[in-house]
Length: 174
Image (tube, rainbow, N blue to C red):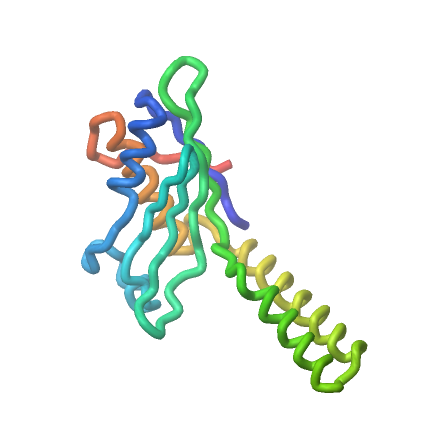
């Protein structure tokens, strides 16, 4: 299953977001776990937009990399500081449904008929959805090195916002 992490920080949201931007990404090859390097991961990209953030893996040329990502938001906490909520799950390709529709349209245009084209589209969507659901259930911090590393990068960044670089804060899994 995918998982959600909730972190609290005494730092204001702007400082937490700046820390995520500055410290959550990782480009040093030696800092990446060997298992991820073998899968073609070359870096962790950290993107911040408004109060939202996203951590994902960048893959090298002709490599698969990892399809796991962390997305979340930073909100002001009621008593001051920040409340960080993040979900780790699949980083879905926005192109997959379009590709399936294009194949169906190509079949129909080539004279295969609307029923065959519709069957291909429905079958493709069912396979994509089923495969994504099965993969999503398999993502845990403990069993998936890619998910665990991204969660640790986020925790390190949030911890650095309060001035400590130890990265020792661990998020409860919800």
